[in-house]
Structure formats: structure tokens, C-alpha cells
Length: 402
Ligand code: FAD
Image (cartoon, rainbow, N blue to C red; front, top):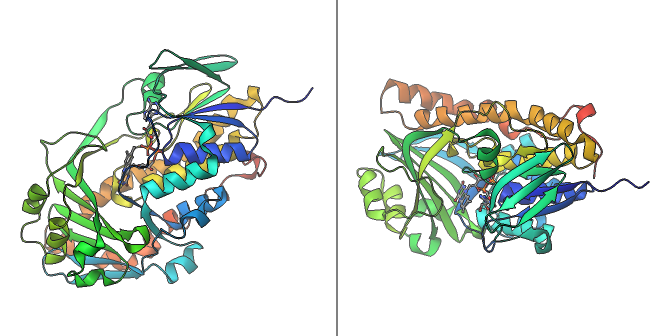
């Protein structure tokens, strides 16, 4: 008798969910992505795709679609908040690419989401499908939607982001850990920034100062500048991608900073603002036929720039392990996936917290010591960017290739 194709329901059509669906389909599974938004128009500002994430996009066949809009910054440059003195400078276009075997890209989140959606095909996404609960039995799972409808699957992947309904349903309410900081982000048209001479070159800028930091890089073929400004604020606690902040307040928070920073903020209109939370690493991601992926599994602060990259690594690894499984092998496959991915993402969750402190040291001996350490950054971060999530899989867990 012919083996039935595995039916997988992916909850969430963000970068992690769409990548998972492409990967699973490539390994022979039947996949539907259930997305709460009425349409995937692509929201968000910029994201960085390191060599480790780029390798996963290549595996999924979507790098060509992004070549035109992704920017390859020439270098990463760390500057002093007030004087503008360069504290460290690392080539990104040349030696990074040679060392880690893939480029470093800065790109709009929306562009990545659209490229993945295009590769998957809209027919495999159910928009307007807000999942409210997942139930399971020995031989299958049922997803319940807010509109009262249901869907059945052999396996369910919760790729539904930081506020994951799947995670809450399976493991109970989480304990969000507030960092006491807010992130402001915006995409600023470069034509408004012609007077900021440093922006003539594509650079990943990191401006570090006491209690605050400011990261900026070009996206959209260099037509937009993305920035992320992190400031302390214990009062603002809204963890949402849709909330707006005030450029005037942001400017006040960066008073006394170098004109590079203040000029960009001045040109930013109404930046998005979100309170920065993470969670303690989960002890488990899978229960029976249900697992978690991306931000749903390991929400992290943005200070390693690894949120999307880790979701892509999860997606390709899960697809490799689960895609070829039989319906009665699902639980074992999900456990294998989780064991393969949890240690690395846990380190990144912790490392992202530590970077926040390190980026925001007051001027003085500790900041001076940090500035010396910045010189060895390419070596210190090699475990992140040099990682190939597929070759890291043990042969016995990697299953067959697409
Ligand atoms: P997400 O990208 O958060 O995707 C989760 C998806 O699940 C979303 O499409 C959401 O609508 C859907 N979903 C949630 N709950 C349900 C439910 N109950 N039923 C069905 N679907 C559900 N990161 C940055 O670094 N910079 C940004 O500017 C930025 N902007 C963002 C804007 C938005 C609107 C979102 C959702 C995320 C943004 N992120 C941004 C986060 C970044 O995309 C993620 O950290 C990273 O890509 C990992 O993605 P993910 O697929 O795990 O989760």
C-alpha cells in the first residue's frame, strides 16, 4: 500500500512559518500555513541576514528573488556616541563572506516574507485564520480557529511568534521578561538623509553610548535606511509590532549624541516602538504531535540580530527531520528536531541579553575594555555566522535530502 503523505499544519505565516512550509513541501509533506492576518502584505522594518541565515535561504531557493533588494554592507563600524570616533571596524563584504561562505545581508522584513510567500505559492496559505487552540490524540491533531472552524493534521508547528497561542495552549502562559528598554525602529527614505555624509557608503553602523545604542543600515537596494534605537524606559511596556512612538521623545532620549544619530531620528517621521521582552529558554518545545519554531520557541532580544536567522535555521532543520517521517514517527521526529536546535538557540537568547549590557556601558574603564574586545568580534561570533544548521545535524538524524 502506498504511504500516505504527512499532513502538517503550520500556524503563522511569518519568516519562520513560510520557510518551514517550503522546506516541508520539498521533503514530500502536504503543508498548509494558517495565518491570522487577513493578508500577508509584509510588515516590519529591516532585518539582518547573516551567513548562517543566508545558507538557509539558499537551501529554500529564495536568494535569487532577494538579490535585487538586499544590501551587502561593506563593513560593520562601531562608533562612540558623542565624538563619532571609530572604535572598531570589520569588513563584511569581503573577508566575512570568504570566511563564513555566504554574504551578510541587510534587507526589509517584508521583502523576505514576500520572497518566501512567492516561492511557497499563495494557495498554500490560509489568511484570516486565527488559531485559538490545538488538541491532539494518539493519531492526529485538531486545530481550532477563532471563527469556530477546525482543521486536522498529523503534526502542528507553532510558528506564531512571541505571543504564540500554540505555546500558551500546550505549555501554559509564559513569563515574559521585560528588559526595561524600548526599541524604536523606522525605515527612513535615503533622499531625506543626503546631508549625512557617512551614509554615502553601505555600512552597518553601531553607535554605542551610556544606557542607549543606535544601529542603522541601508535596505531596499540602498533607498531606505533602517534604524533600531534602544532606550531605557520602565514605564512603556507594550510588546507589539504595530505600535507607533514619537520622534520628538526619541530625539530627547538621544540629546547630546553625535549629529549622525540625531539627524537620522529627525528625518524618521513616526517610528515604530516596542517594549523589549524575552523569555527564559523553554525546557521543551514539543508535546506529542505539536512543536514550536522561531520566536514562538525561543523569543530573544534583538541584540545579536539573530531572530529571523534562527527561525530560518529551525525551519530547514525541522523540514529535513520531519518531512520524510511517517505518520507514526512524528513524535520522535519532533523530539529529534528539538534536541538539535534547543542548545544553540538557548545560547543566543542568553547572549542577546548580555549584548544589551555590553552595548550600553557608561564611558569609563568598562567601556574601554569592551572597545578592545570589539577587535576580536569576527572570531567571537564565528560560532553564530559560520554555523551550517544542516551539516551540524548528526547523520542519523538528518533524514533524506529534498
Ligand atoms: P513572526 O515574524 O512574529 O511571525 C509570526 C506570524 O504568526 C505572524 O505572521 C503572525 O501574524 C502569526 N500569528 C500570530 N498568532 C497567530 C495565531 N494565533 N494564529 C495564526 N497566526 C498567528 N523583527 C525585526 O528585527 N525588525 C522588524 O522590523 C520586525 N518587524 C516585525 C513586524 C511584524 C508585524 C512581526 C509579526 C514581526 C516583526 N519582526 C521584526 C520579528 C521578526 O520577524 C521575527 O523575530 C523573526 O523573523 C522570527 O519570525 P517568526 O516567524 O518566528 O515570528
